[in-house]
Image 1 (cartoon, helix red, strand yellow):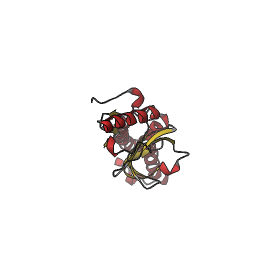
Image 2 (image 1 turned 180 degrees about the vertical axis):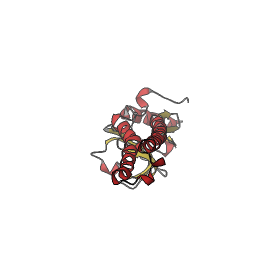
Image 3 (image 1 turned 135 degrees about the vertical axis):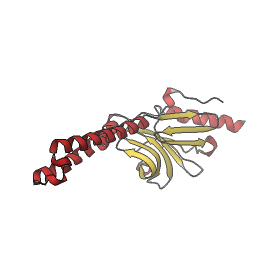
Length: 197
């Protein structure tokens, strides 16, 4: 009855693409926009909007504060992006991804219909509308509506092979473990044993 936490069942961590997007959106983009905004008063000769009429002081205060604020935001989000875990017990599947967690009883999963999928081929399973999630290119975590209009808990990165687990309850799961086929086989085995008991 103890939870199974085998490495091949664990969720794939975010790759370099997702980390680069996070850094760009949290730090580089705000700094570039703010630097452009600071350049406008200097170029137009409107020094009244500068702190103490000083360009160096204004740049130091504004950009320094922004680096601290955006750097802290980036650090927190990067840590939560790495927070990926999957546990299988005799009666439930628990998935934790970034800020979100979903525990689904095995009895609510339609394991006979579950499949290892490539989202480029099965486009109806792609996440489309984020209802309560964290999403950047190369990383999706939390609650989404898929193109098939099913509410789903999603924990996927850039890899090609995902595990789609349709549910008989209110939601499906779309996850990306290291070995999706092995996890599906384990879930089916557990469901079969519990059905006998």
